[in-house]
Length: 319
Length: 271
Ligand SMILES: Nc1ncnc2c1ncn2[C@@H]1O[C@H](COP(=O)(O)OP(=O)(O)O)[C@@H](O)[C@H]1O
Ligand SMILES: [Mg+2]
Image 1 (cartoon, helix red, strand yellow):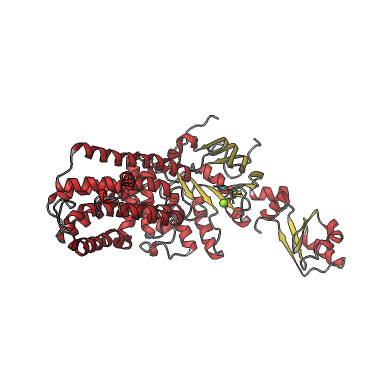
Image 2 (cartoon, chains in turn yellow, red; image 1 turned 90 degrees about the vertical axis):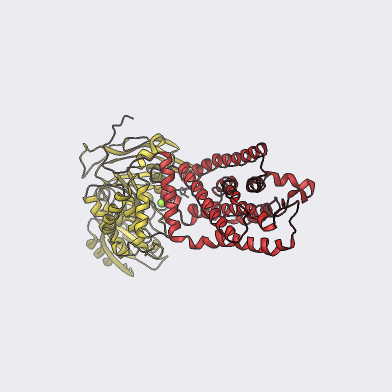
């Protein structure tokens, strides 16, 4: 196993999740193909990868609901194969697809869920009030869940996962399918959790989400881990500081490559644009114009995890 | 791999299997308190309408005689109808409701990430169905008594036998539902199993009226065993040995359903 880089957490913190050569097969299909992961207490750890990368399969194994096919896995120092219920009692799980009880009220969703964790009626009543506040759903407490917006449902799912004050919170694509405003509100809530010391594991196919929330992440593709590090480390390791984007009419961008290829460390060809990886985007743009190349539009920006992914896999994260 | 146990700050604990089952039942009850109206027609009103139509309407044409044990048709019918109703309700509660918890409402998927296990989720479902069968059979008996369909207190004995017959059908059907991806199989179940099973297995007329070769089919159904027990207990004609046989058969059906149900829930929920 390659050494784990730790940024914001000292190595003295205990390891909450450790996977070695972890695999998951569905019949002949290998969804997770031997991954090594180590998550320490207090971290916000991410799995970044496109649809089908094996993120949810991994999360379900960590949440002790899906038996692993091979390899080693320990969660909270215990083996999911033999101690599933004991581990689950201490986890918070936000699944990719909401499974709220839409015919119950918001408050009832929290209370009935807490009862599964052995909390008394008085405990769940009290905890529900606190979580309604946290999820900004207090004014909807006694409304049915069905008509709530997607963002509200997602906040309720997160609130529900906190009912047992989990030692480890697993979030599978927490903001997928939400509008930008709802996403920012959710990020704010997750950021608060992180500040309060809750250990988070997040999967996402949004690079901005990974950059916002994760101290450390792995880039996952085709059931394997392609790279690992903090967002800034990954960017400096696999990309340049800046990127010059040149947009062309689709189909005409390929022909431009020879005349700009020496202006950047690396050029990526996308269906409608060229990406020129360089330390100095403005300088490169000047040079492009100087050579008489006329893109429809151009943009200089900083590198993101999207560029890291493109470099590692040759594909974009979200198609 | 040597690991040290990580100290917990979480308030969650693992429940005993019995408590876990009861907490699941409590959850069903929370749902039912809000949404019972939707099920009231099928579980209460329909059987009462049946009793009125068959007992008063059709029954007025039937003379009390040997076939009805000397009772009016209405009184003869009531204990059997408790059984038929229980099995019909059991079918509703163990088909669409179960598939919904897997596919539409997905409530099982919410529960599996808590300390409860798939087998406990199954136990909760079946216990809840038992609870529903008891309550709807009790309501039905009260209404039947108010309508004069009851000749004496013996009819109360029909209730536990009706519930047992209902569970004998529910347990394997819940297991079956846990293997379904769509509701398609259910209409066939109603049409080709439940309806013939309620009409031709002794509730409305003795199976001695059936052609000889059809009778063994009636014998394998839980309705026939339930009706024999419920009617025998109500009119005091039940003898011990046959009663043990009927109960034994129904308990065996529950047991088979429980074994399969636990297995299929595990298979489906732990993928
Ligand atoms: N229960 C399952 N049965 C068969 N294939 C599955 C199952 N769950 C996931 N897969 C397959 O495994 C691959 C990885 O899926 P998943 O872990 O959901 O990826 P991600 O969450 O990264 O999108 C996909 O190709 C998916 O179709
Ligand atoms: Mg997924």
